[in-house]
Structures are given as C-alpha cells and as structure tokens.
Amino acid sequence: MPYLDQTMAKKPENKNYKVIAENRRARYDYAIESDLEVGIILHGSEVKSLRIGQSNIADSYASVDESELWLTNAYIAPYDRAMFSHEERRKRKLLVSGKELSKLWNATKREGMTLVPLVMYFNDRGLVKLKIGIAKGKKNHDKRATEAKRDWGRQKQRLLRHGD
Image (cartoon, rainbow, N blue to C red; front, top):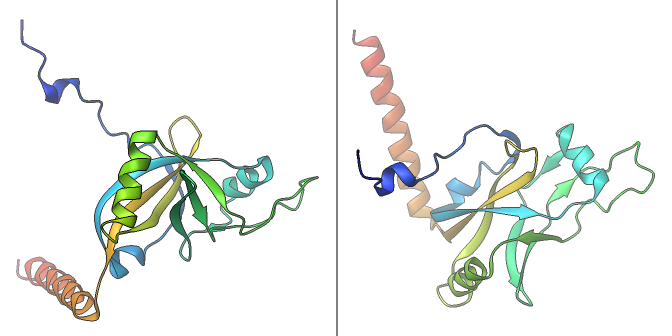
C-alpha cells in the first residue's frame, strides 16, 4: 500500500470559475510576488450586477485598515431592477483569516508592498472571490525590460511557427 505523501494530500487547484473582472494592467505595473484568494462581502444588488458582468477592478486597491482588509474604488454598476440599489464605488470588506491578515499588514507596512486586485470571479460554488496580489511597483526600466522579453517571446513563436 503506497504511503500518502504531500503531493497526494494536496487538493488540486480548481480552474472551474467564471471571470467577472480582470486587472490586466496589474502585471505590467507591478511585480507580483504572491497572490491570495479572499472572499468579499456584497449586497444582493451587487451580486446581480456582477452576474450580468458589469464591473471594473482596474483602478481599485486593497488595504489593511483597523485590523480589517478593505477593497477600495472597485466599480460595480447599479442594478436597474433592484428595489434598494447600492453605491457604485463604496469600500467593500474582504474576508481573510487573522493569520493571513497579519502577513498582509507586515507586507504593506513594513516591506512597502502593495495589495493589488488581480481577478474577481465566481468560484465553482457560485461565490464571488477576489484574487489579490502582494506586489512591488515596477520602475520604467523594469517595464521596458518586461516588454522586450514579451516581444522576443512572440517573435520566437512566430519564427518557430513559420520555420516548419
């Protein structure tokens, strides 16, 4: 009988999710060191609006205030059929464990990192989740190097494709 090792015990990462909003510019402006999946507290009209895909997280950021994690400046369009609508750009509380919260606080306050929302999505159970990245801002020369590396990768793929 084989022994249970760490690779067998890990839960496989589930890719069954529907992307609501994606911050594509984040990977260009920031060097993402690690990422974390967090929950988000929403009103009913916000969830309805997200289901029809009306949101934007490109200008938003996360921060630790008063021992809680908050998402600021995320846009969720008002749902027109709601009896009680919501404010479009209100601060929304993010759900994370106490241990993770202290790590995030240390990263932002002591190490000078930034919490950047990367993707908002519905997971396989239909709950809204947000993936935030713990990132460090890139300088202009870093951005140029990343762009040159990406261009070289594209050119290499083209040469390999047409070289056959």
